[in-house]
Length: 361
Image (cartoon, rainbow, N blue to C red; front, side):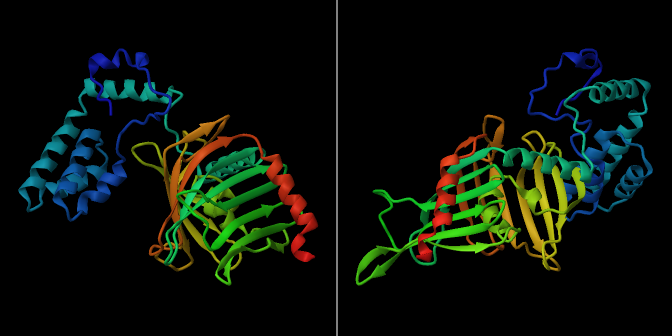
């Protein structure tokens, strides 16, 4: 937050703004402050009143709210409201108005001015970025898979996209700290122009010995059936949400420039509502998301992430976690590499296996 006085207003053009900062005229939205005026916590009410006073906004909705607060039975709230009303009165001073005009002019012409896109503009931008990533993208990392009784499993994963193909491969990590164990050894999801498939490989106990089963596959026609399976990796790291969203209904911004988004999808019979936070300064990276089934108050899918891992014009979250439902144990994900190249070897190996499918022999 930069407080501008008459002296600083003369040199605003000399401010060096870091490239990851989006500028806005006020640190807090007037609507948010007014919404807090009826909060139960008096400290929240007091802070909301301070924000309205600092804003110097003399609109009817602001002054009416402050006059109501000035008549409150709480002396703390009364005093805060009276101070805020005095600040608003002082803001009518010609010198203060001139300062405001100078700041507004500086912001209006600054390339880093926060501009909130319309819902359709944001959806178009998300689709544009996802299409760009789909032409060439590979990321790798690990995830911790909770189990019901055994120790949690460490899984190595790879996501690659390109040439109208998407592959997500998960393989159990086996080393000194993670000895061989029964369970799933590999899941490979393949989405191509002509078919979708999932390849499974497992290890089971037979006569007291651990035995690797032969890989087997399930195939389906091309569609969006596997979007959720794919989303268990790519959604947590912040990408490919536009594959599942039909429309964005609302876009606002918080004090830090993060976009707060409400969206909807009409997939099959399951109408979904999404609540998301999107970072416009990082290729519209989705920082958090909750999906709600029609008529449900608890989310069926929750994801949030942190950090940034970027290379070669591709950026994703560095760490993430997701859970199916509010009571599920979350799955933790970390990223070790990212690039704008597709993994041709993995794609070819997967397609060759599907073409010859040893599980059909």
